[in-house]
Each structure stands twice: as structure tokens, then as C-alpha cells.
Length: 187
Length: 245
Image 1 (cartoon, rainbow over the protein chains, first blue to last red):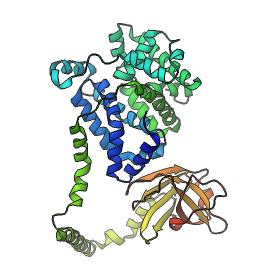
Image 2: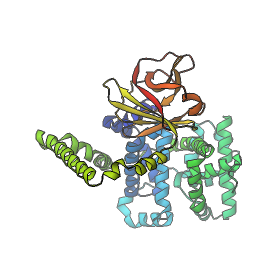
Image 3: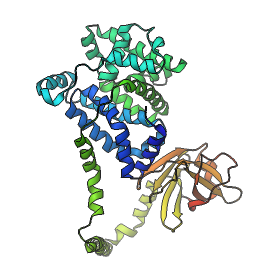
Image 4: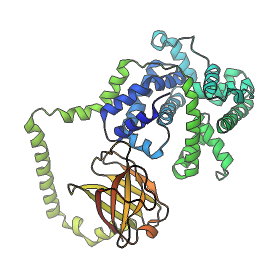
């Protein structure tokens, strides 16, 4: 996906206050990270804010990345997802975000032809060569996982979206996660 | 809730990363992350696995104003510092600041000498500092570059960066302990950190075990974390290691 080695070096430079390395990190990752935020928030202006706060945080805490020694994209995606989920959880519930999206019209022009969460999950598992393994799982279980991951939905939002009982949705999400882990660990 | 059960911990970590763990349960788990390394490790594992799912999202270019906004947030201080109005304004501001500070200190010492030299004050400060091993490492210009510290019975070393250290590509910052007798041994690797930030790493044993006979600490650039028997590269900073008790 990205040149992890180069990103790692650039983040190490960012930890030392190197602004050109920071620009390279932004160049290499912002479109991907913006997509992550936009999927969860459904609004360009709010997603831009999340991107802004995330990159300010990267600038301030790049030293913290090195200590954790994970892959740089994992670290960056976690920062952006956590911030986006915080926004969804706090003032604007998902319901309000969606409603204001409709009200704003032009500002939040998210194309309708974008792939569905389940399609995204299928593509991702395909490229990880675990699609077959994941498809042993009921489609509704995969759908729950996809809605929670890509759209940042809570259990009750997934339940409402799928018109399924909350208890079932909780169990399906759990099974989806367990299956994902087993598939990734066993190839 | 019994967090010792690793399967429960793993499940909570997975739902925490996914985002479906909410409310009080989320807050409790977030607190747990700061104190329980196994919870932190489970979260990192899940962050890695779930981040792979994001690869299928079609990238969306943010508008140019997004980068401009980020730059203005992080850059204003740097720009202001880089472009002084004139050469003398860069000179007189620190000079005035220093003079003011000197006058203030002089006045305070004259007015309240007990605040600076009282035995009570000293005793309190001493009590506030935990029993620790501390090294102040000077660089090639004899300037304080790093403070390396560890509590007496702890296994973690904190490295505070006082000056920027530029790590050559592909190298790591290796921290060494130099005993009064015998060969130097590796303590661990410190991540390069922007001053005045700190980083930390774990040691194989407690400070008391490893450092009680160590006279000096030093750092060098190595190709990889040093293994037992590795001969250190030239030190870029070194200094005495003392007991704080």
C-alpha cells in the first residue's frame, strides 16, 4: 500500500521536528486517511477537521510512534479512526451527522456510487487472501463487522440499520471479529 | 470485571479498536490501557489487524486548504521564530528577558532567602524525589544532551532529550552502562525524540541489579540493538551515573 520503510524514516524525522519529512508523510498518506475519516463522518468539513487534528497530533507525538514500533500506517489509521469515532460519539450522533449531511447538500457531496461497507470488506479480505476463510461466516455477520468498521457504527446503530435485535448484532460482531482474527492468524 | 482473563481482555480490545465498545466500558478500558501492558499489547494487535481492512477504501484527496490549515497550526511558531523583524530584535529580547530574570531572582533571594536555602525545603524536595539512578550525558561540545534515569527497583529507563540528536539513516540510539570494572554492556535502545521530550525502554532486570556498580552511562549509534558482546561504536554522549539517595 505505502512504502513503510520510507514512511518510518520520515516519521523518525518528524519526531525531530523536520517539516519537509512531515510534508512527505502528509503527501503519502492524507488521501487514504481522509477516506477513512470521510467514511465514518459522512461530511467533508468534519472529516477535514479530523484530518487536521490528527496531523497536528502526529506532528506533536511522532516520537510516540517510534516507541510502539508498529507499522506506520497502522499507527496513523488508529489516530484518525479514534478521532473520527470520538466526534461521532460526542456532540454529533451518527443520526445527526447523517441528517446534517442531507441538509448541507453541496458541502457534503459524497458520491452515491461508492462501494458499500460489505463490498469494502470483501475487497480487503480478497487482497489479504482470507476472503474464502471469511466467507465461511454468515453474510449478515460480515455485514455487521463492515458497518462497525467502515462506518463507525455502534451496536445499536448496526441493529437499527439491519433491522435485527441488538443482542444478535452484538453476538454477530463478536463472531465477525473472532473469525477475522482466526483467518488472519492462520492465513 | 475480571481483566486477568486473556480471552476477555482480547474481546474488549477488539471491540475497543473496532469502536463498538462505548460509554463507561470504553472509558474503563482506556484507563486500563495506561496501566496494563497486556491490554495495550492486545489493542496494538487489533489495531494492526483492523487497519488492514482499510486498504480497500478508495483514496479521497483532501482539498489543498486542509494542508494549509495543518501548516498554520504547526508552523506559526516556527515561522515567527525564523523571521525576526531585525537582527537586533533577536538580540535584545533574550537580553531583556535575562536581565529581568536576574533582577527578579536577586530580589527574591534578598526578600525570602528561606525559600531558597531552608533545610525544610531541601528535605521536602529530597523526599519528593524517588530513589533513582540518574545519568546526565554531555555531548561532544560538553553540553548536556540527555538525562537517563530509572527508579531504583524499576525496570524502565527514561531518556529525556535536552538537545536534538540527528540519528543517521538506518541507525539506532543505543544506551550503554559502563561499570567501574569490566566491559560496557547495553541497557536498551532509545527512540529519537524532539527535545524536551522523553522516551523510555524496558531493561532485562532492575536498576539496582544492573546499575549499582555502574560509574558512567553513554550512548552511541549502532546498526541494530546491541547484542551481548557487541563492542560499542564511538560514544556521542556520556556522563556519570549517580544514585539519588
